[in-house]
Image (cartoon, rainbow, N blue to C red; front, side, top):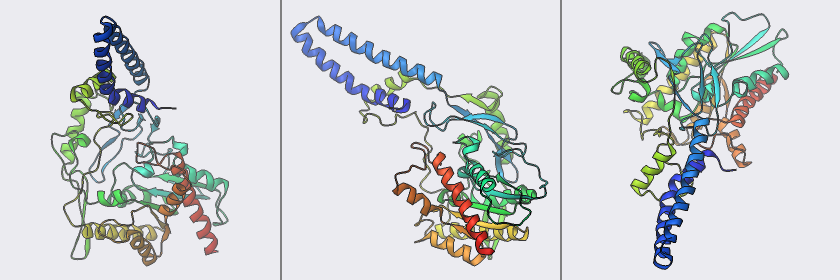
Length: 416
């Protein structure tokens, strides 16, 4: 069945061809049948208007939303707003692939409500990462963290004898670089006394560590701001720098809420099928039928390069951050595990995956080659990502959760 997204695309991108064909047929009819040409034009106009009207009603019934669900943070750069209820349907102008109701907990994470104190017999697992861990594209029960929690409680690995229950805590936050996951561990995650810590690695999260300025669309400011905490290596040591423009970030977001969002953090997106068709006609855009129309999805394509330093420097600062995080996790008495979803050729490395596996051997920590499981799913023609969204769908989250469960079962069996 054709989706609403594709139906709007077909109408908008195919309309110039329809109009051209109508004019041609009407010209022929006028030369031969005279008055009948007007009937042809009227019939086509009525048909196209009716289709546009039906699609506009569907769009109105399936609205998407812009949400300021991230708030400024002077240490982390930003994090989710605590105790916020909101709806996410991706970046499309209207609901197409998913429509998810989100509830953050009192700590400002997309997770169940958690207490710092850990009960006797509870084994805790902390998940660190960015939007793939946050997983606002699926209901909470379908996230990788909840998949893992349910499997652990149903099929517990051979841990200590007093292990009665498992809790998997989600500390993922959109657009985080690896450096920010270190800060999340220091500010929040360690306080929950986890027994295992999984760090999700992706090419984007590694690049974001070195990204400096955020676009006004993100901050609500008039210009690009430096609101991400910085990391660099100086004289062989990892050096941090706090976000520089947090005050402007706060001011910009307050202005957005006051002037654009009507005093709230959510606004309904507006999309006019008729206006889009008019703009397509005006530009004579003979796009392929079904192709995404401009304006259906905002320009969220990543820039060619997010940072000014060399790829090698970005790679080395990320490796230093991971070493620091591993040391702190191990010092806290937890097991540290790298979940590798990086690209083979990335950050100036011929094989970044081999680099990450070598790092796990160096640190004597766990390692999950998630990229291999994803490639296997792709070979079996099992989609793990949304068609028009880069994030994991339900199958992708399930694969990630099951991969972590498999590692825990195998690792603990080997230890015994």
